[in-house]
Image (cartoon, rainbow, N blue to C red; front, side, top):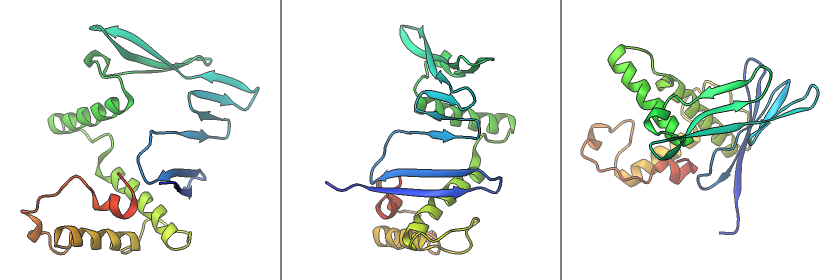
Length: 197
């Protein structure tokens, strides 16, 4: 493969925040957040403050637990310092993805045993997925502006449903009962149509 496409978008929120989003397609890649605000920006492992041109290194501090290096906390030497403590270090959970998965599992446990709301939950997942659909739909329609919430079926959804029916023999919305004995493989139809993991 000698060509790489980029998915990109500008997302405007009601509170005036603008997000510039970009990701190479196809294929997964590590998270890379560059966040710019009114007083500064974060890029990689650095925080830059516009007023005075101050730069702060985001530091990962590890400790040895049972012979393994485990993330203890993340800090910035600002005044006052900003510190995030790893709530899962006692379990040896250290990597970014591992911490995210542990947060999900602990949240599910608390929701089931203590009747507390999920940290993330279906409502936020739906909003995130709707943003992904809107970005892809905008690209399919010549970069047309897409307002949220989306009303009605989009072209990308129609294509996903069509691919699903082609792959599994039944429509995922109108023929749910016919799919109850279907064996689904790991290769997602969403990935086939839109390149999402």
